[in-house]
Length: 301
Image 1 (cartoon, rainbow, N blue to C red):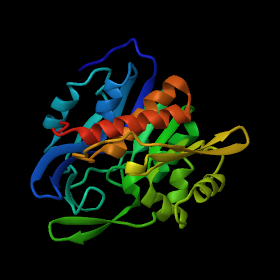
Image 2: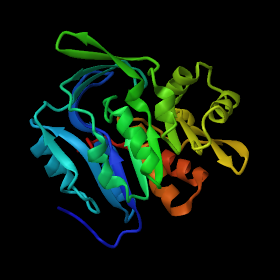
Image 3: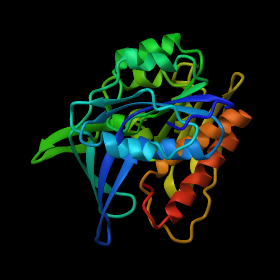
């Protein structure tokens, strides 16, 4: 397995790797891999940190995924586990670039505390809720109590409920019952505008974003709200103050594909933040990498 020892930081990455079938707005169908693979690809390509993914992979996808992961540098694959369940397979029906219907088939089990323990010596752990139940809440809370590094959390599919339909589960937005307990485990929280409004119960604005952070435990140091073509807003603590900054987007003349942009934003944020310690520079780097993804015509994997 690729592994480079002379690394600056150690980054744990927690979540799920999906098989994606994407039905595009103008017609056409794309088969790809997604979810945590976007985080891993761009984390590995963006610096010299050692990347340690903690992931369950279904028996039907294990060999293919491991072949992909084996191409990356600065990665330790020792915490990847093949499980007996079928892997997560997400069918995304795009009505346009911003609105889609998701049907999920299969599903690997959530991670336990025992699986998380190897990450206790990381500098930062990125948790991306790709499937929703990627990690058990009790395990996450216990890990948080013992972990001395930073936790970057993309709440993402934690906000998606499941309704059984023919052949799988249709995913729909809903406020998670214990969302505040999840958020209390994060140092840096990533949401998109719709997820923010769902959690806060408020229309998005600079005022409501600042009030949201003020209402959370002081362990939450930064909130990043991604807004697609509008860039992003960050609210962060500086001493006893809460500061709100608009981070303008990187202009893209033609958008080819937005799949994975949120995941890539998170990877860009994490790598820059570990290097500079600046929330502003981190968000700018996240915007830059997400914009580069939008320009891509080819599949990532």
